[in-house]
Amino acid sequence: MSHLSAPHFHDEAAAFQFLEEALWPHGPVCPRCGGLDRITTVKGGRAGLRRCGPCKRQFTVTVGTVFESSHVKLPMWLQAAYLLCSSKKGISSHQLMRILDVQYKTAWFMTHRLREAMKSGKLPPMGGAGVTVEIDETFIGTKYKKPEGARGYAHKNAIMTLVQRGGSARSFHVDGTSAADLLPIIKANVEPGTHVMTDEAGQYAHLNKHFAEHDFVRHGVGEYGRGLVHTNTVEGFYSVFKRGMKGIYQHCAVKHLHRYVTEFDSRYNNRVRLGVDDQQRTVAALRGIVGKRLTYRSSLPNAAQH
Ligand SMILES: [Zn+2]
Image (cartoon, rainbow, N blue to C red):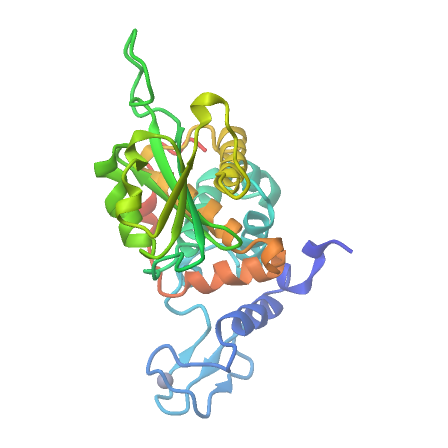
């Protein structure tokens, strides 16, 4: 049976129950007063409606989330979240529009809200003694038309990614790829005791001053790695990222790039190899929806292209 035939993807009451289990693993919490006691179901009320014992007010699990003010029904939101979280390279707003049979701007709004939900709060630094973090950068899209005769990648958007081997990835849309652009971010996100691994690029030349160990691969002389010295993990991350960005998100506006970067990090950090299945990955994204209220107006692009 198709995963999408599950009741919470079609039935309002089942959708509320699913979201309640995801957001209230320890039972309902009143979003108005924080109360936990004597919370009852309102008989004959709309799906998911509860009444709080202490403050007597009514609420549902969607209070304070983007789902509350959206005209899209909750089962449809859950379908969108599942599709976005279970597609390895993501899903375009156009494709979602066709699958869900909604307007393009609705599909666009939904995918961007879900990406926003995937964003983690402030995280402690990665790495540590005996742990390896690979660092690399890639270029995507164009900031401006490449001047005639110009060389290099200055006209493209630069992304830097830190990947802990066997662990998570963190990507950043950076202003440029000089040491001045990258080093402050690396230092803020990687423990000093870490073994860092890069290629031979000049911007990484002095990492050994800041980290316990620094090894690098000499791609320039055709070297792809010497035993444990390689950047294959971060390159593997980029191969999925670049195929997704090229194939699905061809015309990503620069101001939204950080959200796509978050989406690819999030899927990588909740990947099957770490024991996370499609449903758990979806639940993780839904949990991120709580408290992240970006209104339709403030997120609507001037010209959404994808
Ligand atoms: Zn209350």
